[in-house]
Image 1 (tube, rainbow, N blue to C red):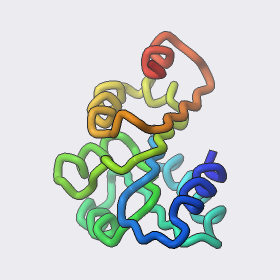
Image 2 (tube, one colour):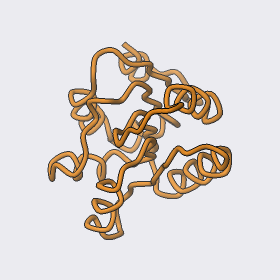
Image 3 (cartoon, rainbow, N blue to C red):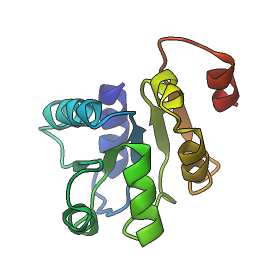
Length: 144
């Protein structure tokens, strides 16, 4: 899913300066966050797009500084993303693409409340992509 997002953002960015986060990729674990961000970085190497990974267990202040420098794509775990939202170190109001990667695992790990809190911070008009190995009732409700 990263290539189409990169293409879309690169085409929208042509000739424009923006410091707004325009794509958010939510993942259940820090390991997956690092892996997905690595793909974004490698595939987007010939673009001016900037991405960063946000997860717990590392300095939130260092992450806030990177966010303040401007980023187009954020790959994050729900808990640490909410920490940044509460601190005011990022805004999700310019998001036009939201991805739930391994949504079934996020729900299995008990992230539903965090996901709902994040969804309330997003614009209503956006593209939402949901990837899941299974399609349980909880995933169906999330897709609504």
